[in-house]
Amino acid sequence: MTELIKFFMTIFTSISIFFSATFFPAEIKPETENFDFTYLQYPEEAVFSLEKAGVSVEDFKARVDADLPEYVQSGGYDDVNGIFISPYYSAKIGDKEIPVYASMVFNRADDTGDIHSFSEIYVDTNEEFCFTISLTGTSFELKNAIVLPEKHGVGTECKNGTARASITKPGIYTFLVNGAQQHYGFTLFAREKFDEEKEIAEYIEQYGKENVIICDPGVHNFDYLNYVGMENKVLYLKQGAYLMANHRYDIMSAEDENLYFEESAPSDNAIGLTRYPFVNFYRCKNIKITGKGVIDMTRLDRRERRGMVFTDCENISLDGIKIINSPEWSLISYCCKNIDIKDVDILGHRGNCDGFAICNSHNVTVDNCFARVADDTFEVKALGGKMDSNNITFTNCIAWGGYARCFGITGEVCKKISNVTFRDCAVVYRDAVWDNNRIGSLVVVAEICEGSIDGIVFENIEIFRDEGRPILVKIYDEEAENFEIKNVVYKNISYTSYMTPKIDGTDSNANTLQVTLENITSNNKKISKPGLRFEVGRNSDVTFR
Image 1 (spheres, one colour):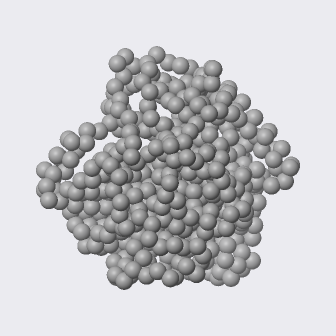
Image 2 (cartoon, rainbow, N blue to C red):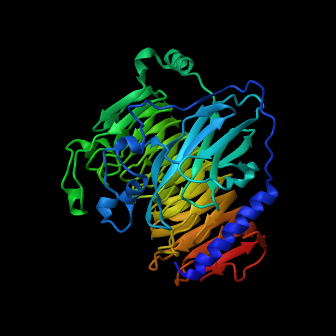
Image 3 (cartoon, one colour):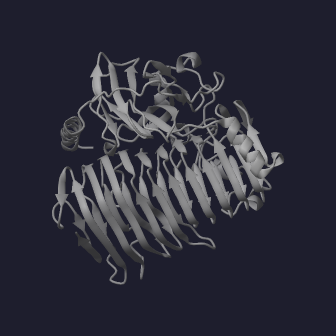
């Protein structure tokens, strides 16, 4: 990155902090009397400090430095689990201390590892409430802070190394501190209160005791979990249930990936995998996976397994879990129908550990989820297969992209992709610029053009900062012929970026690219017509409103 771009980054950072302070001045409101909440807590044997592991923060982050060989940088390790006690923060809700955990992520701007901290609390969403969170830096001086997404309208008060903010509704709140830099990110998840024993009893009554599989708190080690042809079951991962993947295959090169074959794996999935994913569902129906458990793949080498994979499944509900450090593609839906994903969070530092990959599926909802990964975060594809991708909706999701794209249609369009909506979502950061004709925050990028794209909506989305393109619509395959991208709408989008958005077809006159832009705000200035702030290429039918 040039010194000029770095200079403008500093200016934009100052502007962002200024506007946040101006629009959302700190207002520490009176707390709800006897405010009642619970918090997420993991067993001591599952999560421990880096200090206990004998690893310094700097040495730990250096494990994923981009100067390392690819398969070392994205390799597994077994001295620290994927979730550990945050070395950066302590936190309180009112006067009550809550645990602060963390996980390794990737910072593309610096090409090295970073640590993302988080806490999770559970509140009664049926009642009005107000509580104060106090966030204190324990290993650095916390000087200032902002809270994202900005739509929450939450200001902060910073004194004596502590940031305080008033929260009045459930949601996902990410704090950026000390000039809104990436290095000390903290997210508070405020979600609906629950009663585990009551929920389990209700599932047993509904499904029958033999059909409710309960995973208790504690560390549970598996090579993989395989569910084939399962119907009418509940998998309940209690709070503190920590599912750890065992490392079995040493993969230090692309050639090593093809050395290991699990005999029954190809017949137990529809996506062509020769080794089992860590959690595999194939031809399953009417399945609910829920609870506050963790799926951790930190010990696995790069591409040793994929994460949680659903193929040829129907009527699946996935609610509440966290997926950590998948070696490749964290959560996949392929050739599935009627999938409901809610309150699922994905963190990962490895290349190709895409977050939510919805492929060749119908009737999918992804709501109130968070992803900070070193690849695409929330994506729709249409791979080769018997189904297209249709009727897919993402709402209230938060993306922090550490390598590629945040929301959109990405890469493979081997079948038709239609009726896909991204609404009321937000991008915290997206920091990669390795191919600005291929990556961005809100994208429709077709790299394999064998199908078509019709009816893609991005609405009510804010992008705090994109170091490349905030919007990109691109037919990336220069040999594409008679390929259509139609009815793409960007509405009520605001962003700060260091490059212009781009809408561009190919040189072929046979391709169609149709986009409507309505109420787009660029770096605090509304765009009303094409100009220097937008790149519109060949065969692009663009309407500004």
